[in-house]
Image (tube, rainbow, N blue to C red; front, side, top):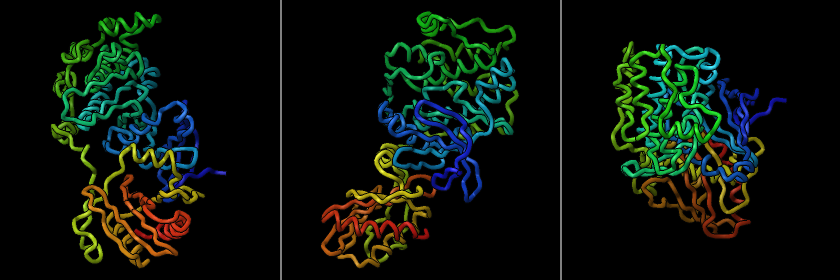
Length: 436
């Protein structure tokens, strides 16, 4: 019997890790293929990796780039969290290196441009990947398109304008770690990523790592002092020059993304389409993604004078989403049961304007004692008072999850929980059938 999760039929296992598996999946409606990362809740709680998962989900929610694996949606059951991801039919850069011994410079140059494009985009969003390695770089079989993957160890700088955004966590794969990360003296994640890119470029074109020793202490010392193996004779002069600027021990003297793009090796035989990437992908110097993601809803769609100002639906942040996923069952999953606590939720697909309009009209039809918007600049939230056997006061908030999915969250503010639960059971059922 085929197992189903939400709108997806699960297929073969594509990979397996310490905390779950990755399966192929088909959307039963659109017949599109996806990869679903299935994470065991108990394992991540036991290993205290909730924070890492929070960051990965939040980062994947705010990034959208052709060279980064795309998060489609997030689902949950009582025991599992499901990350529905774009499925890349191909393999890892690592496998290509091993199967071909090394990658010729012209071919690697095309791959490297795409990797740089992705990391440049991440830097514009104040995201440091922190685990860049060939295993986390996927290549599409048919198109040779690069996709950067696995943001589980990434760092998201909360204040992009703060120049002192130093990190102190040693993470990543040892051969690709920058000297300052190994020394744990505080480091800039973006500059550490540049070093990792240098190791990837060396390994790809040489077929062996620049730093290698069976003795870990010697290996780490070689990395800290940048004592890499001599360049192979077949390396071009331009490649040697670029690598010597990437593998620099002092992070402030290391080449920047923009200077990599201008480097002669990078620019050799660059196509007009590739040149256009780096013109189109110009980013503001002060990234704005830390402001709430807002969707404006015209007030003329709403009845009466209930809404004084234009309202907004904001996207759930990673930490908010994970609190829902680790504590609740998202109602869209099969056999999900309504919650009996003072807070519950359901997901609705559709356009935000229609969702707000229909939700308001639904509650107005219930003839409440009062209904009003809670004044808040970055969220759509209403408070409702009903006479239902006895008075209950409820808060309803609509949050943008991802794509065209929205979460309607209910909270009992005043009144008896048993009466609220009867009301909630009926409300969740009826709202879930709304066409938005």
